[in-house]
Image 1 (cartoon, rainbow, N blue to C red):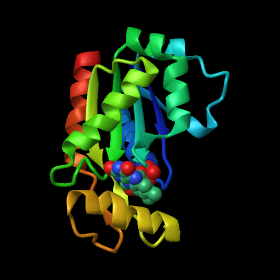
Image 2 (cartoon, rainbow, N blue to C red):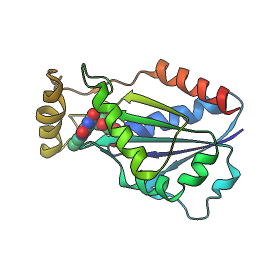
Image 3 (cartoon, rainbow, N blue to C red):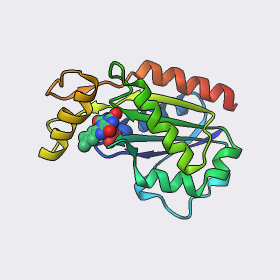
Image 4 (spheres, rainbow, N blue to C red):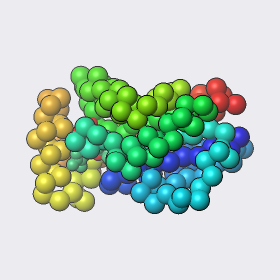
Length: 176
Ligand SMILES: Cc1cc2nc3c(=O)[nH]c(=O)nc-3n(C[C@H](O)[C@H](O)[C@H](O)COP(=O)(O)O)c2cc1C
């Protein structure tokens, strides 16, 4: 199978997740290509792929515009082939916030007209050492406060790599 992974990232965690996914799929004996939605070449022949994985992270309750534009432009092709969405956020791992993480996905897919066959809500990371003042305030006082969780105030990775591996294996099984 020939799989295309397109990702959107702002601080880099989703790039790491997408790259890990590409390696995992390659190890399972499939061909795989990885593309950043912010640097997609127009010559990319989407029709040559058998399956698609879109990975994007959430900021201010929305996925990246570059991902929204890519999926909206190609939703008919995506709907006609096996496709999966990996939505990376903090809400995905915060107590009582799972419905919030699902809401981001529901809004996204309804706007772009895409029905991914499978969706994974996956925890991202906090990178306080890389945030500017504004980003730090948003994470501490909006994202974390909403769930009542204490902000760790240090870098922390919440991504569940085993859950990601299970999801990708199930996707390859159903797509194949
Ligand atoms: C400024 C800012 C705003 C964020 N807004 C949200 C949000 O609305 N909901 C949420 O669940 N997570 C939010 N997050 C957490 C990110 O989704 C998380 O850090 C993710 O790992 C970022 O992935 P990336 O590094 O691929 O961009 C926000 C993070 C930052 C820095």
